[in-house]
Length: 463
Image (cartoon, rainbow, N blue to C red; front, side, top):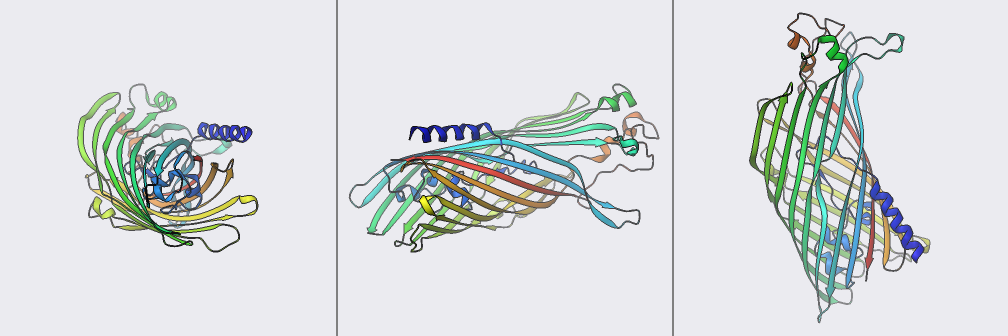
């Protein structure tokens, strides 16, 4: 046992040392975690009816008394590898479309973690329980780098000169710490009903920084002190509360159902921002406040355990998200989750799942109008478990997701027109004097392709 426990701890430490990543596009709404329990993650992030792991209370508070154990603890760690490729359409001299030309490709890594625990006891036909958990609800981390090179040809295998480097750095997490109360009632030998309440505190700090830095080659070509660097820094504080109510019921030996309703959440969003141009502050604000809304959600799921020699679980769930609570431009959406766990020889489970979730891309135009676009993200998942003892389990979950959408150019092309700064009639940084550097808007957007490879691991112990 000691060797197995040591092995599990080593694996967890290795996983903690890794990093995970998120999309740079979602700097306002962030990236939604869902559930970090590795078992549920491997089964398509299902688990609104879950009687096996302590972290089941993070998805449905009514799962607490559904778990027929007096106490439990679980720690979860999450890693994700995000690849972001941005392309523009490529045309020939006859204005015929050829292909999409990738002009920026980014790959970055970060990490996140969660923890949960509960205790419960049985007076008469009732089962009462209390629990608590911590998890990141939204992640705002992301990194982006883009090199701006001129249009010199590539004769003799020489690269065009690099004239500027654009970077975006997002940092921050919206944390959730919740207390859970639950009551269960035994309806019979294979039937019970459970009702749970989740009272959560949300808080977090985020930082958004967008920079344009001219290279030394560009400075030497044009002259010292002519080309202005640009920087925009925005710091945000988020604070508020979130409430959820849930139910779970074992209908018979084969069927279970679960449902949750998460209330609309309005957070206080406090903003400080500073803009500098050529090393001089040209704009700033302090303690600007606005509401930050997380829409209400209703989730319903069914669990089916067929009469097999070896244990099998089927989960299928739907989630209705009221995005319309954010504004008139948003439409309500339905997310879909499905998963299966099948135990083979020596009780080693194989888990598979699929999910399709909706999110929104929010862009503020130059006239302060807001453009929103809905994005669908499919994901396929899989995983297994290592039963270290009857009570100690190490779960592993893997996921691959992808999405493709259009987005406005992150940096204005006209900024690299050195004639604006020199006052000359001809370019000094661009060999071809006939090019026209103009800003691209929605008539010629970027095509963004993203993919995520993720790993979730959990170590759980139940008494």
